[in-house]
Length: 377
Image: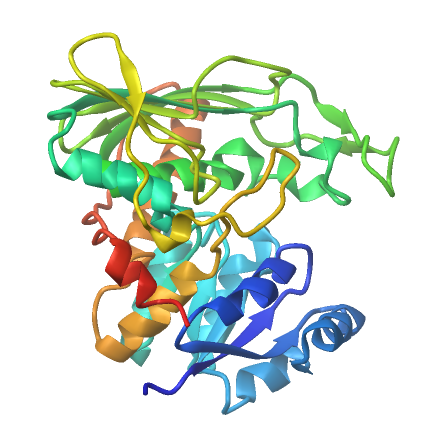
């Protein structure tokens, strides 16, 4: 049996509970320590999940840690990931990996020089629903994909998050915060993007927090909150992407792909599960038969009903890929291409022109039923 790789977590905020709770589902990884700029936060998580609380320097020097998960705020992702690599550890980062392409290239160069692996969330495209959608595209069910639409729109993050400030600062906004789920799934389904264009705006210069404990506080908005983008893929497909925190309600589907032989309706890429639907050349739309994919099994209660949540699947796949010396599905190349897509969208919105991408990547290998089972304990 392959020995588990030791995992350390830096950043013990809200998202860390997901990693602590779900990591035990997977083979090949074991969370052994955590750290935070606030030692009390690390102590609290360590006590809750039975791991060791350490300072950041202690964790990076810990010989029992092979991979460090970077769960800091977006603006800190790059310096913290660089620090992890310099300490000789593999990096798995929350999205976005970095805030500029130059930062990503620096991480790639550093990782290559040290023989280390860098991967990044989101891993929701590994979910049963999105892999089912991938199987429909790969089998030619809708023919050649020619176009599509994606919509992720809501009133904003200040409605529910206890500390929403960073969502409205450069490095966040709906494109860099929610866009990774959509861009990663589009790369999964269609492949790399060639060029983008966008219009960007914001409805207000400030936001008033309506969530506790800071209800009533006013925070600045320093990044676009309403973006309408057009993506041209190397395959020739063209997809519109609308990402907005200035919309109270709408009736758009999350993701639809249109092909020469039919259409595919893909559920929210922010989640692992959901209903996949398809049509042929007629107007009749029908559900694709569910398959026995382990990452389709509902395992968590949610305000919208039971959902399938297998976050850390990308981390487990990374650990397996390191052991097997293969390409991880949430690889640096794909993540960096996704960053290129998103920062180019924002650049286009700022400059009012098409922007050609300077990176490319391959599609990730599909994660079928047996491959997914092989990641689980």
